[in-house]
Image (cartoon, rainbow, N blue to C red; front, side, top):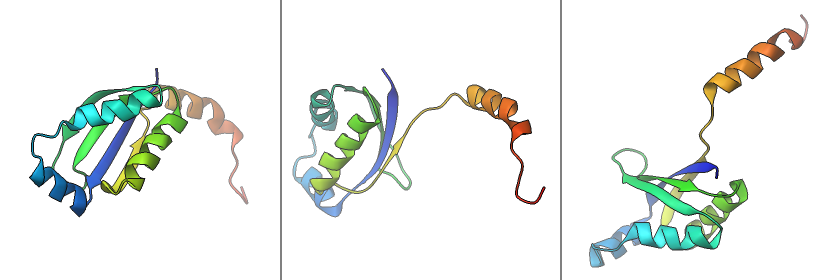
Length: 108
């Protein structure tokens, strides 16, 4: 199953909720939502920086990842979220190498 990485920043309201309930199991909450779209949480890592966490999901397709974003962003839990897909850079370079001779810039 394809993997998707979701990085997000909690909203002030979500942070306030977590202060009220500091033992809240966010992995279980994320897994519940992921299972409804046919996937599961692989890992959630809380980080310092622009985002509060990076979560790795196994999901059937991008639409499932987008559905997770839609339901969680509409809940008010996050102020920012980004979906990223892991890529095979060697395969990308191989494809680029084979296509490189075919592309001609305007005016060249």
